[in-house]
Length: 229
Image (cartoon, rainbow, N blue to C red; front, side, top):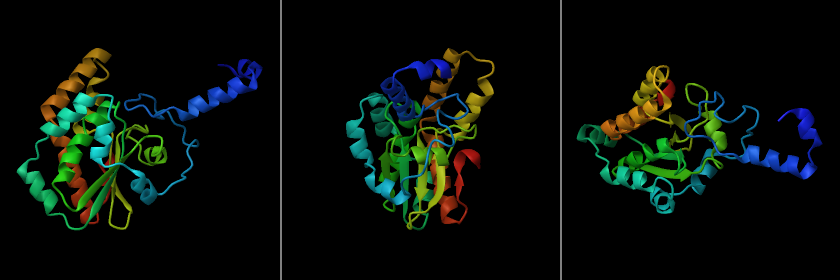
């Protein structure tokens, strides 16, 4: 809509449009370089600690899932934790928390977070809480994808003092690379089909491995965000 037309609209309509645009949630797989946000639109109004305390446990989140419910349930129930990864994770010293920004309708959330929750179930020194993209919007802005988008899921690793010591953003590196390599020469339908096939074959193993590496890196004083390492 051009500026001259916008100025001719009644004040209440203009206000409603502005509110709707600002309130729009992030797209889980947006191709827009800004992920649906502008860098100047978000002012941090929260802290990691307060945001974490307002989050839900995975069980609480799962009980409220409505969109993609079968995917969430199946991935959580069917998650397999390789012994080698589990031993590495249990060898990590310290106490840690995972602050997750996710939405049940987001395919990337449904295909990563259940595996992380299953891992956390086996690690008494790691806790997990989930908030929605509206509450955690400033956190999405802080940890963007390699191509500059704010996206769900975003997982931030907090140490015992509540400091941000690493992150996992949107999807495993292997899937991200596959999409980047194939997007130029596959139709959207073929691209989506290939993505789902990649997920089925991987069965969450890449997500689990990256999270264990994130924990190990933080414990050794090498914090990083997986997608941009």
